[in-house]
Amino acid sequence: MTENSSTNSICDEDDSTKSQQNDCKTQQEETFNYDDILEHLGQLGQYQLRTFLWLCIPAFFPGMVVMSYTFTGAVPVYRCFIEGCDADYSVSSEPNNVYTPWLNNTIPWTEDNTPDQCKRYNYTWTNLEECQQPDAPTDPSMIVGCDHWVYDTSLFQSTIVTEFDLTCENEWKETLAGSVYMFGMLVGAATLGNIADRIGRKLAFSVNVVVLATLTTGLAFSPNFATFCVLRFLCGVTAIGHFLILFVWGVEAVGKKYRVMCGFIYQCVFTVGCAVLGLVAYYIRDWKNLQLVISVPMFALVSLYWVVPESIRWLITKKRYSEARILILQAAKMNKKSVPDHLIFVGKAKSDNADGRDHEGEPISSSNSKGESIRDVFRSKILWKRFAIMFFAWIAAVMGYYGITFSATNLSDDFFLNYELAMAVEIPAYISGIFLMDKLGRRPTLSGGLIASGIACLITGLVPEDPPAIRITFSMLGKLFISCVMATVYSYTSDLFPTSARSAAVGLCSTCGRIGGILAPIIATAGRKIDPALPFIVFAGVNLSVGLLCLLLPETNKTTLPNTVKEAEEMEKYTLSCMRRSKNRMEEPKGTIDHSNIFQCDQTLKKGF
Image (cartoon, rainbow, N blue to C red; front, side, top):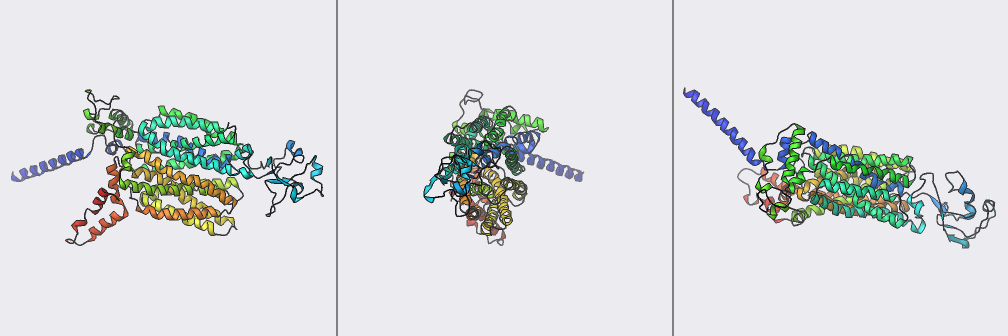
């Protein structure tokens, strides 16, 4: 009898323990904590997968928009138009009338044995026979500048260079148009991310995509170069906003287990768009037609407003709990899951009526209704340090990514092959990046990728020009590693900052990255005019330096996304210095621990750096 009583007592204690554990778990789960909700909802259920896949469609277009200038702004071979001599060729069906037998009589030659692109002999020719006379005068004192030009149409039927005569002393304008776009991306990254944090991912994306489609279509009808530059600048503003908004929108929908994979897949879709652009440009050699083919289909993306739901995480951050609850219940139904009521309970304090009052008409306190913003992030010394490092990381990543792509087209004679190779290496970069970020972590992938890219670029710049295969191989390796870095900085930046300012944080870091984007076409042009190896030496120095600096960042692998500034600050314990101190304390013999240093990292968090 005593034995049975003892057994029953033990069973009761076990039941009591289990009940207490369940109660503790329930207490630990906060109301409207999206990470807790995802534990019940599923981190990548049908609802989240549907949102993610729909957003892959608009991710296809930003790459086409940004890389289109590689083709629409290409500089063909050109020379002076010779009146009288070129007249007969104007009605010819020959695709190439740049090099003709009479150039020796009409145009001076340079030291590298090529016709001067900007000068001609100041003679009057009346017919083609005079141009071809073997004893035609070639007096150096009669050399003048060109008024009109003849362009090589064997590669491109037309570009903005041929449209607006961006030649000789005006050739710098071609580089300007490329840098203007990057400057637009700088402005867009600084502004549109913050707008998306304020008005929501859904509305911001829908308005932005209509504006982007209108601007890119308008480029094809630019009457002059100034108009083209203004529209190109505005395209940069909206194109970067387009990708930043959809990226954050898609990543916020899924759980931490799938964040990296989803981010890299968006980057892969971006690259596929770039690669498809190369194939389209191969068959459409007229810049206006190419521009229209890229831009017109984007108008259809506005239909996603009625298809893709608003970010639940954003709604919770903005304390719009009633709307978030409706979407959570929809997700639970679609995923065939259930979410405990205590996680989505909308009480008096969580009412989110439009007039700022609860269900009984009492005003909600401003501290609860407004939440944190990017200003609160800037008040933290720890997050300031994190911003500074990521600023440099973005500059190096963007400069290397676009710079290597632009410079690679100068390494061999096949323009389209060089471009497609530069795009093709990105796919394995993103696939390997998913594995590396999961196994090694975000910090080693970012830092190691920058250092590896720097080494590859350095080799590219130092090896002999002949044979070109060596330079091409190492430049593609540099592009492979920097592509991995480019995708990593999006996911990593998203991990490092709180939900209340995540879009703005990614946008501001991306803004600084556009400084590298502005410099990229300038450096690539210097390589075309001076030495193809020069850009790669520059990229090597920048990547190696910043790669070492990134070792100071905290690791975010397998951590939950921080919702508040405080949670983001607490991630500093995952920096190398704090982790090393923690490891040293664990290795000290029992009884010899210096208790005065136990909370050293925590004190560092409170004081800042």
